[in-house]
Length: 361
Image (cartoon, rainbow, N blue to C red):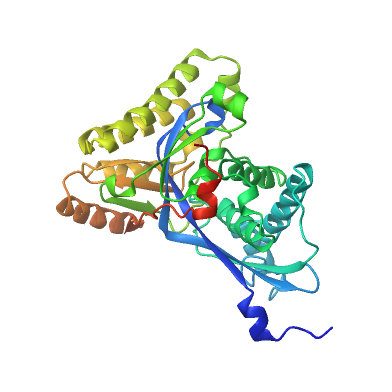
């Protein structure tokens, strides 16, 4: 059989882009059966490309999956700054999880092969969900290549992405994957009854235009993340009264936040963001959060802005209720502190018609 020409392969190429994620309000992790509000951040993204090919090939990224070095010092410095893992393992894992899910649910796949490659500009260790963006983009490619998007429900897809990451020992929850599957602004309720009955939370897309202007702060060298392992989840499982009541309050902040956003009560939103971080700090402690992460929050608060982590640390989402003059003060303060600051760009929901057909109701 004749080989496909390069132009023909290019025309059959599938490409998906998935954006970084910001946790705006709610629980630090959905394992606590809480609530969260998150949105997709247009500032950063991951892309995955799929091309039909004779063999199934996972292409290493020339930067993130580096295997050639100038010497031992280069290799060791690279491992100390970037760790051992790139994106190839993420692509392989979602292929396995997708294949097994289709087998278990009697979804027939053609026997065609493909080549997967990826790229990303999501800063590492910033709590912006860079790994799950790669996995989500790859899953979208697989759904389209095998033409089974209509057979894999939207609310199930975050579970598949999470399973692929857990397969690799990545500790994660559903909220990041939900925001990246749905796009836009999403309110999520992980009530225990929902989780046990449905196997997932109840996810409600919201209008992104309701959000006020927000800022993103992050450190270019986020090496000073918390060094102390947190015991919060164990204490929650053990029924620690302080942790249980604090987690309930954090979940309630997301519920109040949904109302505040819908009513455009931005003063209330600012209070909720600040309270969200204060509760997290009281539960986890400064050693676990890391001094650099705390300083990012406090540099915003010193100019009167509301701020909290976007995720587990490494980046901060900020609301300046006094508008442009306050943003200018914040920019100056960040420059002096050595932090990167940029306006937040929010991605509208990117579910297509086939996706919407799989939604409940």
